[in-house]
Length: 331
Image (cartoon, rainbow, N blue to C red):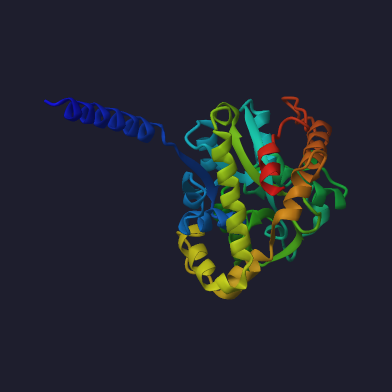
């Protein structure tokens, strides 16, 4: 073999080695969600290749329930999750180490407290109230409603059922009051002789939502990749707000966000979008800055837990969330 040929062979082996090494090091980030309209930008970013444009590989996994999502997060089967921030605090209270990455939206009417039209509120004390998730995200919301009736959480029995089962039980008259979210909340109202007593729009920011990671996973996240993920999210949020993209957006929602539901009409989707506040840049900055809306919510939630003897694991509202990467994306 000639000197030139031998050098070419050596270079080929070296390039092949580094190519394989690079491929082995490539990471696909798994982001978990549930079927909820506020999380649809995840499906947009994946479907339209926004994350690939940002140079990061992401797989979005749509779980069948909050409980399944939480289990995947706790067992480190996903890298990042998107759901109610109060649920992340609830998991932290059970000893799961979590790092909140940033607030993305509010439920703003999509979560509903539903009564039977004939219910006598004075008879609620000692009765069972159904909730789709027995976590601070939901019980804090419920407590606001109970306070208007001069009641507290200790005056009622909170029963957890998944959203579809909750709607079914309300329709079957097993509960007089439930907490549920759309679209199952709407089904409970329409088929169960229900009326809306309060919604998450009754108190601004009562159910904020956002990204989180198991703290052990968070330590392994490449900050450049996390920046790319959050940029892709914001790109999808902006794209979704453009009326020119409505038909494509509606198709993504029906196919990806709600994969097991019947196709929703224009009105259905517009109504659901009206029941959330997906943060654009300015609102995201306000929520995620030091001392902003997210931190204040954590302060309020901690006080709620303490008042109700539910604070099992202490936490510092200033450090439970690390929003620095998100803030840098929003600048």
